[in-house]
Length: 565
Ligand SMILES: [Zn+2]
Image: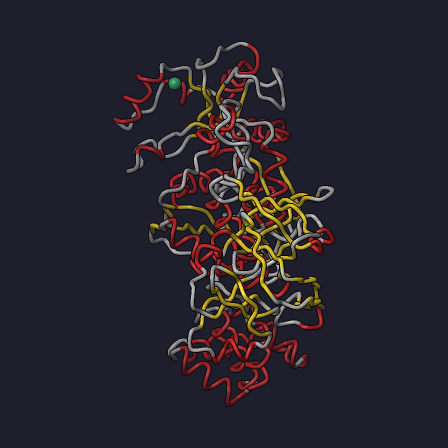
């Protein structure tokens, strides 16, 4: 009997970091040997004794002993081990893990949101849990109606469509009202009519205002009056906390207020609005959020939310905050960006110059790149500053890893210049769609002496050197003429007077190409005819230039968006 108890006690100690639950050990012991059910008191006594022994051991010793006694339990433990790119979270269990991302609908999501949303999603994945999107729109003064759709679309994109539930808080006002009423009836909340400045003075001194002591019945009448009698600012619903709390912010904080501002979703119907801490607490409670992962600017609110949840008898989630990430040189303000869009400075939230997700998606950035970025940074309380240069370097490298195998190659000749290679043979040149994946097939260009090269290469062609047109031929400049030398690449490689290898296009049979660049300007040129077989949204590498996304295909013209080098 002792051995059975010992191995389950060791296993329990290992699973719960040294804290052994006697009931769990009893359960496992009885499950293994049903005969012991007849002598539970005796078994419990033995369990107590064993636990005292095991608790003296270090975790290393526990592991060693379990390895000797019941290695199969250790193996099972390994199988259960959580695997993922992130540090494990406290009290997180596989399959019983619910997190949420909770943006306000003030604009589209940007690179900062991408970090937070990705981190939540990666944790949900790691724990086989759920990810909820909650749009926090209980401040009627700060709503941008288009944001609902933009946020949902981009959040789903970041999470590979794994958001299981979308919650819009303004659709849940009735629920908040019910909870508020409950707190009033419980004597835990009161409606304060005091002048705000007087109230602040009283609170500062740790004194309760006269409203706090009124009977529940009176509070209920006052609460009802919030919906139709009081004017904005005349009454606030407050939670009774410790009026002498060391932190004045925790003393009797507000739950609900009157705001006459017309909310674009609910119209004039609603005038009583929950403060963020209240709606957040209720929703976390109602949706069984197990872990709240967000920025440390939410830490004070989290304390308030916990008080509310406890009053309602709910289970408080585990809170983990990350430090402030200062994306240096980026304008991430929704209000400023919204204004700039309205003033025509940007074409929309997907303007190529913006660090918002609609723009980055349109350039061809992949959700996986943002998720990789988030897991690389991880969840840490340390503040950090990320320069523009550093951000792009990282995100571009993660993105390149994802897209490279699928990005077929094409020639794009910016600002084409025609040159004639005297003596060059007519040749059908076959080029790989992707040099690393020959199975993807070939593209064909017909060369016949006269070809197009970029203006930039044209100015770089030095006299007296052997230059090469990719996969076509070698040439040199003599007597101000471009003269064919040979076809073989070996010749070029061995040449002492090696010039440059450049890409080119036939004289005719090309398509017009426009590339929208990072700075919003457009680069013009020509491309291979075969580009017309591309599909919108496809990613390519314009050889010797950069990666780009097909934005639009017209009759004989194709528009790309610059992605990165
Ligand atoms: Zn008062």
